Length: 159
Image (tube, rainbow, N blue to C red; front, side):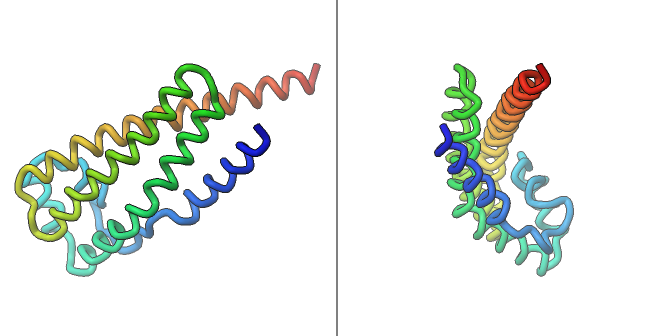
């Protein structure tokens, strides 16, 4: 288990340090585009960005694919360390979230390159929604487990 902790800390540091640079991406941001379900919403978001904002969004997207395996394996490792039946399920869910992110990225890239008609907004929104649900569930489960573990350690130390 000690080696898993070391791996987890390295993965967590890589997840934080290597995350894509969203500098220059203009409001409402790339997440709004990920969740835009229609061509109209996608066009409003992209059309509201300046040329520099669109360039920043494209740069962010180009950095996202290499980051996906890092964050999804980090989440999966945290879930395995948290243990239990839900830890195993959410470990798999974390890897599925990464796969969903890669599919969503293909759709986002199409929209950023002027192809914002269906099915791209629907594909992006569908896979982004699944991704976010799975990521949030994995983070909550891992944090809950971590807090329970720490509380147990503190209780034993005080006793």
